[in-house]
Length: 137
Length: 131
Image (tube, rainbow over all chains, first blue to last red; front, side, top):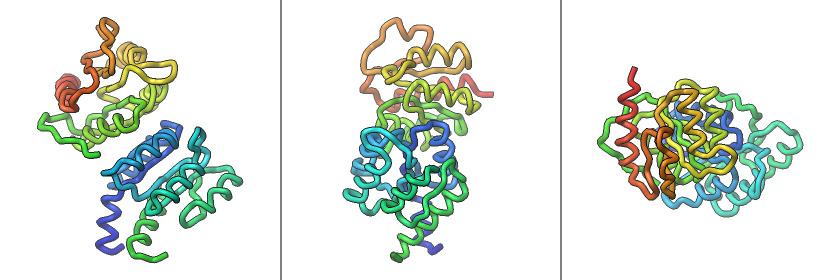
């Protein structure tokens, strides 16, 4: 990882969206221990509010693919694609169909499995940030 | 959104559970306490807060909004916390709840509050729970 990428990784802000508190807390806590700034949202509606905050620059969205509500995971991914294309989207889930549908909206599939394997999530985030900072497609 | 730093020394490594259904308010409080070195767990309603308390130990302080969706509001949560976990509780609300908070909360702040007010109260309460 280059110096620039390392710095970016250490200061990157990750938005974790998950309706299950214990899942959300566990992965958010782990990512914070790894040095990231993490913002937690319980729903797509909350996430939409967070990404509109003018002085918060989200680098990565990590979202449960099975997220329900007025703004579900796919709606949120589309919203971010449209309004905040610099945010890298990672959808996580187990249902194969949902994963396949999500793949078209995500960066660098395949998608992460959920329940999360923390090290895999961290590796994926590091990889995506490094790739983004190196300017490679 | 950047939480302002305060000079009130909080107990680093203390675990604070913040329950609020408004994401931006919750984030502001959580970010402030994290910047002070605390571990912060976020809950978006009373049910989530109780799930955390049942599974994540130890929690040293609970900060909760009173008005939250679901069957467990802040008052009910505070009663559970006091009865089952004997932890200090700070309640906040846009409406003054009167005598409802007496005996269930160690401190109460009406919205809009200054984050420093909560930090000062938290520092005092956490000092009282030091091992």
